[in-house]
Image (cartoon, rainbow, N blue to C red; front, side, top):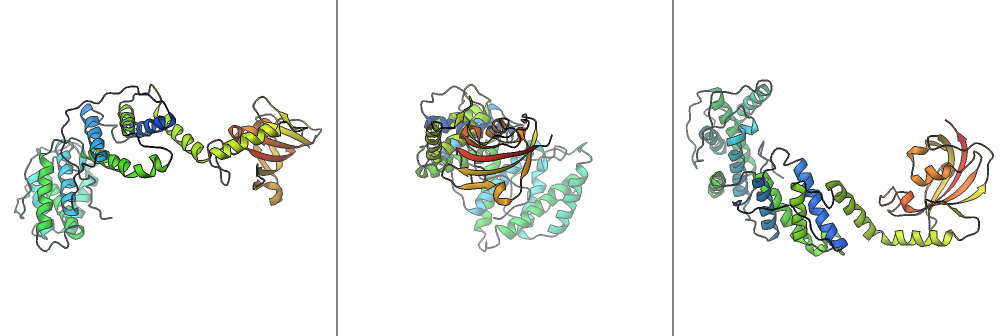
Length: 417
């Protein structure tokens, strides 16, 4: 993918902020509803925490949601590369009008000088400085500005980008910084975007879209682009099922409301963290539902066997050999030999097979181990049948599938501390 230095905006379409999107409670009558809502909520909450931590105004939220709707409806304007890059840069320049050049508030942008450098770089004009000189100068000034943010007497100057290179006088340090920034970006655009433009049509499209972007009403183009792309992706992935799961169908209205609630910190039904966990556990449950059901059936039958005992938590165990030593506590560090299998006999881990016992703290292992080993006097050997909720639950652990019931033969060799 080609990169244009320091411009990280993306093509978006002109919108108006006429709507207001309210946070509100939604009706969730099924797992499918809940996953759709949770998907929007967790992503909205993450955007609020990261992309919008400095700007979560009503206007910005509205811009994002309208862009999300537009992307889902397939109403995103498609541009060729040159026009798209022009629009990107136009939006970036527009943001610099309020935030300063490269979002340095001490550096007001002079668009007349910047555009002269930009077009000069595209046209290969090295009268005032070459691309390398411009880059070295700009980087030096940028590094220095981080030490001195007192600003200058210069003012923001707005202008239209011309199709033709123009001569400007560099009467101040800020003029030179603006011009250098234009030259270095223009030279990269020429190299990566307009290298094959023998007719000038791509350059014309580039400048045209740049100027259109300058006139737009968008206040946060990066967020708008994100909304359009997310909406577009949701639509494109519908045939494969929500989040790639064929049994789940897309409900765009619930996803959208989830975004709105996440962006506005509305957590009456679930928090962003809870939404993320809900999606994870639900998808695992769908994918590994048979594993969970088989484990439950196995344990229901196993507890009826002679010699099998069941604790209040649901942990099952049988004594193979009872030792005569002390019992560990939950804070103890113990030395054991063990052999672990799935309920179908598949071995997933075994210190016995490795021929080397292992030591660990009982408060740092799965709950089934923490509880079970405390039942064992030193010298004992027990067989534990551990329900998935006392094992790894919805998590995948190495070769252990989510929701797996586990069987361990454990020999307690010593209590080390």
